[in-house]
Image 1 (cartoon, helix red, strand yellow):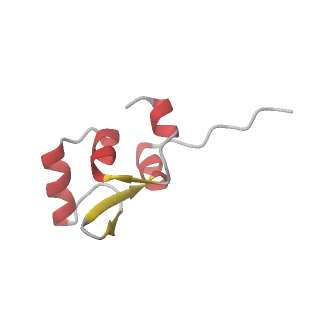
Image 2 (cartoon, one colour):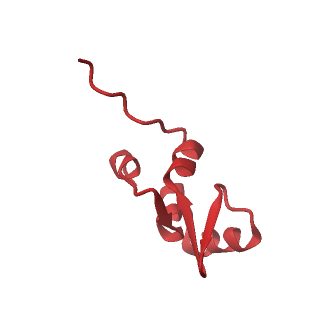
Image 3 (tube, helix red, strand yellow):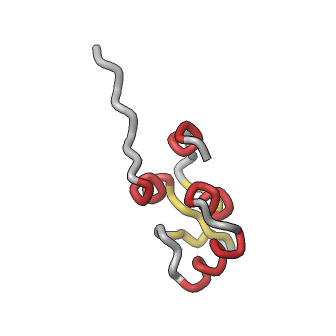
Length: 70
């Protein structure tokens, strides 16, 4: 996933997108989620897992872009 893609993620993303952002395979990501060992906090929405953009950015050491100088 490119830096621009990471910066433009929606507020919450499905586990498959979070796996891609973190460089995890599908099986590994779901196994970690089920064990409660996923690298970022996950939200349960019905039977689905979601990760927040904030937690992904924080884990990856990304920060919001600086606003343009006036």
